[in-house]
Amino acid sequence: MPEWEIHNKWARRLGIPEKISNFVNSLVDFPEENQEFMEFLDTEDKKLCMGKRKHIVILPYRATVGKHDSGRRRKTAMYLQLRFLRQKGSEYVKAWYLHHILDYIKSAPVLGIEEILKRVENKTESCKELEIVKNFVMSNSDEILEECR
Image (cartoon, rainbow, N blue to C red):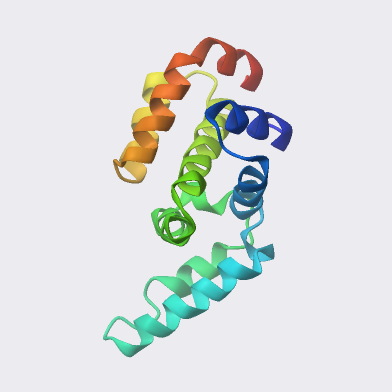
């Protein structure tokens, strides 16, 4: 995957502060090291335990939480990371989408930008932050492709 320096560069160009970009980089790549996120998972797990769907969502995710980039491979992980970041604000959500798109570009060199953006949207949800990131990536696609591949 691209170095964090590349993630930070493109986040900066999108207007996202480096502090936020680094927080999101760390969350995506090493979620088990993010104490705030782990506490969020514990809280979500307790909420689910009070209902009928005990441990259906969180426990399977916790089994993968230590794996690098786990948030991109599983819809549950993506959902939980986005839910966590939405509490922190729109800039965090944009940084998350950008991180995943840049990683996807690096990992799937045969796919075009449009296909990658479509796949990311299909795995998550359409929202204003994703639309902003998609437009930004399309506007800078040549330079992003050159740098990430």
